[in-house]
Length: 287
Image 1 (cartoon, rainbow, N blue to C red):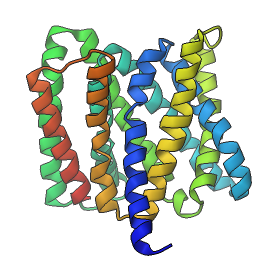
Image 2 (image 1 turned 90 degrees about the vertical axis):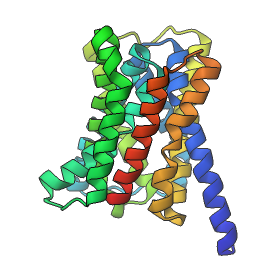
Image 3 (image 1 turned 90 degrees about the horizontal axis):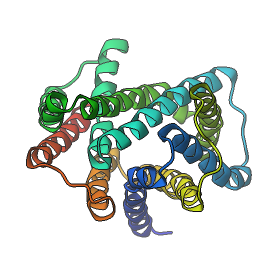
């Protein structure tokens, strides 16, 4: 296939992937199920969906050290998903998604503290702008409604755990192809999410049909189709294009939440959200 056609396909799949993950918070809220249960079934149905692809691509068994890092990353991913899903019900789909997309902040700080990497001036400018935007989004709710404010901090906590997931799995992904990495990661995600549901004694069965359909949509549309499409584009487009494009997710979610959940944002949240996105763009550029 000519490189021009490959490039067009990569751009189309990047847009498709971002469009798919943009629905995640909407499906979580519309499911009406407990937040942690919703996270479990997202992993479970994605795992069911990837099995035939995984078998076709040939399952390879990583070494023990690699499996350990995948497991640790999966544990952090489950924590991220649990906090983000709870935040969606506590705040709004759009705000929870915006705040949960701040993992780049923690990845940069983690690289500096753990790996002693020097961060550029662009990163620090972006960090300052992103923090200013976050304060604009959350400060009124933190003061006037502590419960909603707690939801905001849960979403930020989700971003922290997603950053841990990225740091644990970054080097591993150089050793494994996308399907094998995703398959093994899902094995551990399903396991840890199931244990979390048991520990919290959360309802896991006897849901209405529409709830099961949202679970399936989360697993097959948002997680499997969304992230496989994005991972494909990462293999054919520079990260300098993919990383900023991923900032479209909270924008898509905001539009969908307005149309399907009747959620709206205050003016300072819109300005703050745009400020956060600008800050994250600079952080990605400066890493």
